[in-house]
Image 1 (cartoon, rainbow, N blue to C red):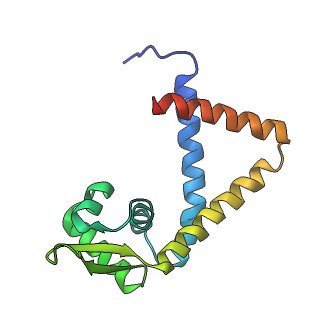
Image 2 (cartoon, rainbow, N blue to C red):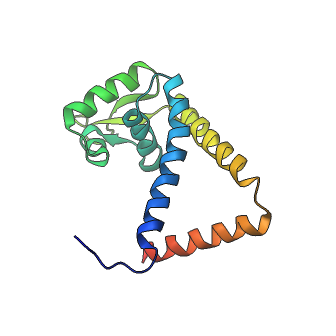
Length: 145
């Protein structure tokens, strides 16, 4: 199957995927030290970004089955990364809330990723780093339209 993409689209998409995979792999090495799986860490990141969620909402954001998400939250709760809390307005609703330990882990992983990337970018001069950022900003802006 031959497709007609503008020049370099295939190469750019491939490089973006490769870069994202390397950065993600560096962060995952740290979460393994905590005995967490990548989906468990993804759940922490979602809770950090979106706030307290029901198991169903979290399940939808993780693209996992409700039962899988329930097991995942059970493990995160036992480790002290999250707690389940009854909703103030509807006591039948239970929300998953990120704990300080979970927030701290996210920051440690992001710091490790940033340190790795900083080490790589250190070999570039300031103008080269600014140009990379400028191009990434242009790409992001076009994707956000």
